[in-house]
Length: 430
Ligand code: GAL
Image (cartoon, rainbow, N blue to C red; front, side, top):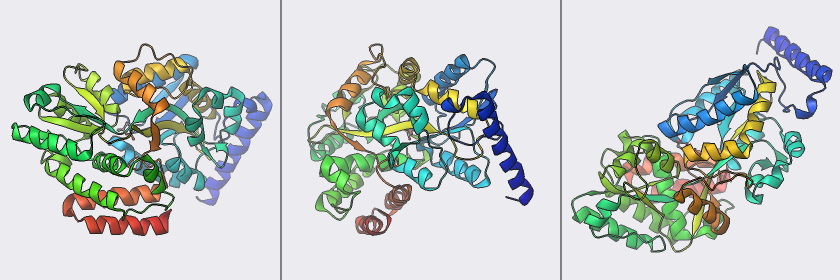
């Protein structure tokens, strides 16, 4: 920043601080220092650009507008499922000192990277004033914290390890997929689908998170929930026989997938599955929202099972929003935005479009789908673990190593090389 700009920025921060002092509204003000404290505009970034994602985001935008008459919202979403592109664009803006008012992120590991970088505002005061912790399951509230302080606000809970299925394709192959069956049983079912003349698996990993999430589901099923967690505390190695077996399985499942998988997106893949181009597709339950958005009928055009394995594991992928620690353009509007996100009715309406379940426990979910009722039950009773493909379970650096290793593996199918990268990362990046 030039000396002139630094001066401008510091004057703006001072002006915002005195505005807060004068109006006495600091109690409800987010901690981010503001450049003008304005309430007429709000810019938010996310990676929600598919049909269902955009509709769900719109629920939030209309929600905040309803609480702030005259507010104009700039939806600066950057396309690319899983958010790698959006996070890259955000990093450039943070680096340049011109952040949006609020951005989408995952809690826990991904959040911690922004906290460590001094990029997100401490929201503890806002949390305390609104007693938000008491309205969330303990694990969800904890995931929004780093070192006991809150830095983000959750909008919903997704499940990553869901296998979406096409009932007609499965029936034609005389296959039933048992969620408590082994990965071996799944693979024999997939081979049976192939023998019936249909591509077994639809995959759309133009954005690499899709195949990273498939591999993660297989690893979890092979290792179990407890060992999955230990992979990120370095108490269990990526070199373990169960992980090696998961890579063998993944290699087989890749060979049973559509050949153009790296050219299509996650949403294209799940729609192909519902259209009968293949038997199954692994994807987080944002797929539910997308399929319903595409007029597909649950139970008829598509069905679902938890990714097979002998435990009920819920692979938690959380969505939420934070605000910048410095140079927030519109602090008051950002404050209204964060409060809107925690409104139970907004969370339910958002979930109805998105396929997620509300994060808050005081939301009425009786109007949500059968799939979501099951997901809510499972979130309360299953072994909940966090996603690596979505950078939630560990640091952003380690998650990036995993994404890169999956990309390389998809080309080379070299198991030893994959394990070598991950075990090195376990030693150096955890
Ligand atoms: C995830 C996010 C979901 C969904 C998905 C595909 O990271 O948690 O809400 O949008 O990406 O873009």
